[in-house]
Length: 162
Image (cartoon, rainbow, N blue to C red; front, side, top):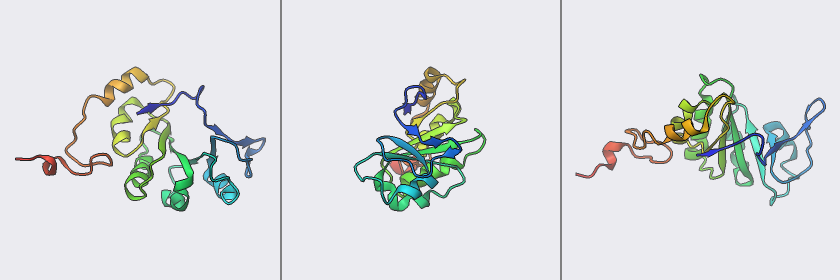
């Protein structure tokens, strides 16, 4: 799991005076909204890394035709009790076979990390009051789960050899 510090992150959103700039100029490591991406995807250079931030209400299938061009997908957790972004991560990894970075942002707590990892999210920006040392410790507590997930798709009973 990669931990993101918002002060040193190399990915940058593109805003304007009145909200997101709907026609951002292509530059490396730009993090766009889905609407911005749809506005510029036909003119965005293929060799220029781009990231797309998705609200947890968006169907990730909307990105399917473009996933080969997207280096980063940011999934938003507006509340720690709202788990829709877990499903988005799972669909990106298991159904759409996305291999780029999937990042969780928003109300991300240490307790969420094991499930985030199991659903395919490989980078997190923890909520400001969360501790990275505790987060790393939590990730090492349980490493072999009974159920399958995006990393180990087979359940435990089918992995055990007699």
